[in-house]
Image 1: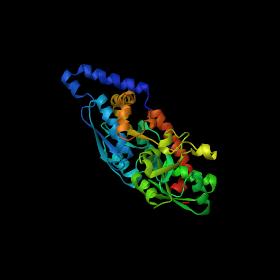
Image 2: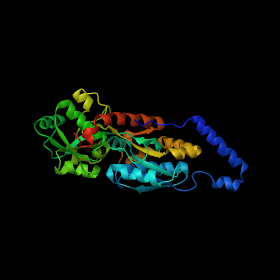
Image 3: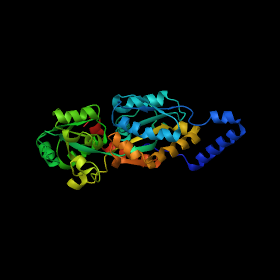
Image 4: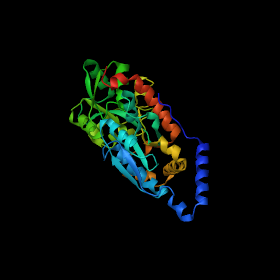
Length: 336
């Protein structure tokens, strides 16, 4: 299991003191030139432009840039369920706090459970979570399935085809856990992205689909939600007042959440602790910005899913995902 290192306050203070001493000893012009950030911050996004991560990224950074006095430049690297973006970030981007990656921790961490990457997982750190978005089960509006019990009953008679945006996804684990609990049989079919996963359910290409519920809620009456993999359906009518798995089936499955978050090279933290402190402190300020709820609403996001997470919260989330991912590794990799 990955060991997540959290930079200590002492290290931050030592780094800040050293930078301050250098600035005082240097001419004013030179010290000003070394201020951070002095140029745009580049962000690798390991999914397609226009998707959920892109939407959250643009909404969040539209305010974050005001606290950093700089702009964010996204670069999209879809492919291999997010692996391409991480390979580019870890292999080609400089560790200087001017390069970040913004991804979906749930599916992307599950990738490393299914197949280890070419880089050391301890060489990057999630430090800023923007949201937690629970997975759900949904069908097209014209589907014969009206309730989750209809799906379970049908799944006991034949194996149902289930669309998912990526094989290794928290929502995929949710439906596998449902099958394990009820005896219903499900065949996961990765449809490459949320847009295709919704279309698969709407057109009947698959029997039903699983996905992050925020994306499903945004589709309105074209889909119908039947189950939510969370402790509570906080969106209520926007998800058709669908029950939660634990309440409906008496299970104890942890919330199957996707969580978009910023990550950084650990080497950048070690080399520039003062810069990293600035990133962390300004990141947190966005959540108290009075304009943030309206920005999220305009981006068609769900304010109920927005919540701050720092280094510790991200590490706890990753630990949970790794543990449950290991349990379902064979099914997620198509080897069972």
